Length: 436
Image (cartoon, rainbow, N blue to C red; front, side):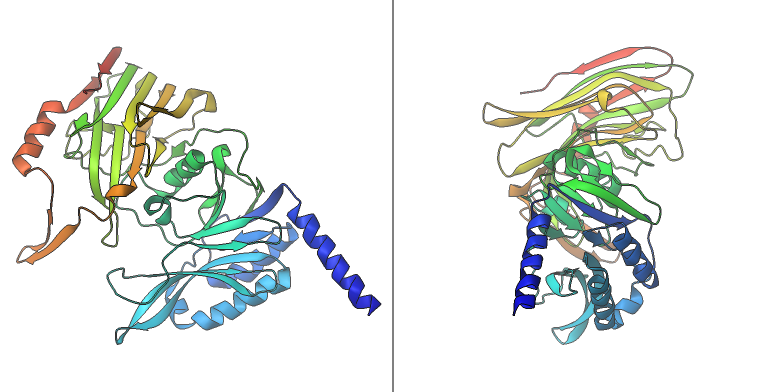
């Protein structure tokens, strides 16, 4: 009896010690790995005293569709043997409406290997099946409640909380929403910790962690920390700018741009604004408000793609964008994409309530090799309102979008308000005043 009591007391003391900590240790793989590498990864995480590990999405997921149960058993055993929380994204088969469908599943295992959270979505979102599609949560023994997400939830949902685990494949049809770029922006704007298969993001402190095969980060439970600008370095995405203007309907972006340049590189920059509903994969339509500066090699406003250009002769001495957004049911994120790193002192982002609007400003100083800069805003009230109607004809798949101006008006409007900055060897300052 005395031995049992001592064991219980020790267990309670360990639990209290863990929950009283201000931080926890999170781990992710430094690269995509096959399922066979999971055992080695979890063991290395245990050696690094990791509390929670997010496994990478397996390189070859086809086998997991058939062997889902076996995969669950293996991961459960690994979590139990190494005494840590493990988050995994697996594919499974489920019968829906008389046929087999593939289901995306995020599973969370506790330190004893028990499944304590399951979050599922159909791979084919048009299929009707009895699945829970709301965000799952779980409470850990170190006193942190996590939200369980798939990458698209960061865009689709207005989330509350300070700690989230995210895993699953990322497919975005909106150019500015690449995973490395938007994960940083989302964590910065919400000041929330994001432990994902793409990296660990510590709120406003940005991407963090160190290690070789496994990246380990010490995270504060409240997500607070040193502020670091959410810069991302990458190659740009091809963008169709035919829908963008400086003022789109009643939504206007106020640009202040001062540039200088050297050399003879011929490069155009477009100043753009967009408000409306955009297609976001799986038949979903989301309300967005966007302000952006975008480079266009070749001078066409319909397709801005600078391809393999990694360096430009343009120096942005100062660039700022200000716009008024809805005060409720909305969220705004800074988007900064460059081919080289920028310092924290070069960046400023803030928002304030004024005259029943949320005024957001983003600024950048002395920046070079800038590929994308702006504000990506979400208007959650417009989600699923302006749906696309799919029409099949002899030419293939076409779309009809309701509540939108006809093509002639679009072209005329874009031609009238399209602004290009042609930079050669001179200094130019541009002020585009907000139209009320």
